[in-house]
Length: 285
Image (cartoon, rainbow, N blue to C red; front, side):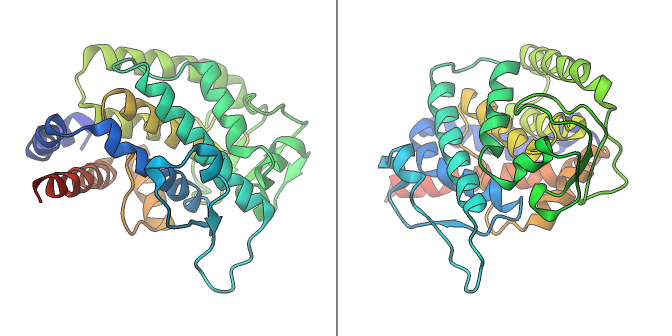
């Protein structure tokens, strides 16, 4: 079942989301979720860090970046893990502010996506995927890459594989620039035509980006930044899926990449609806 068919099947759920969203200040609701979204995004990359319990809505991005801790006993907290979460919080805060000023537009340009890819990996172990002849260690984001160094933010120059799905075949490096050009052209066309509701289009964007896997590492984090940005521009809040497990997320996105997006779409829609329901209940009290 493709995205259009899933959209038809979930029409009532989408209508409920938009009905609630029309009554609520979505931009204000999204503020306290920005850091949570960043934390969940790095959790998917096996980062054990958690955020302190703070007033996320009124805390600056520079202060949020300092408020990282771990809640799991015996977890070895590395400098890389701390930097990774700090990087993502700062990037997500920038996305929220930038998107608010560009409401209704199609999304990030290619240069901005490259910049966010740099932010996602700088001063973390993921830089090793850009920097070594061959990386086979778990500290390089789980990717296997060969070849000469690639400057941060540049597209990969050799084939790549991922541990989460060794059978997944990605475009050859020579194809990546053209693939990314087509990605942005496709996104802009889909945005103009509006055949897909923004939440569903954001899911497809995420899957499409990961299928290209343009960078040596940080592709998952960057894909979720692209999703956050697009949804914010269309007036939706960051999608924080409660009680999400890494393996469940990877399975859902992998399924979407194989033409079975329903599970991923439902998880995203239900997460959006849950936030809106909570906000609506608070307003009625």
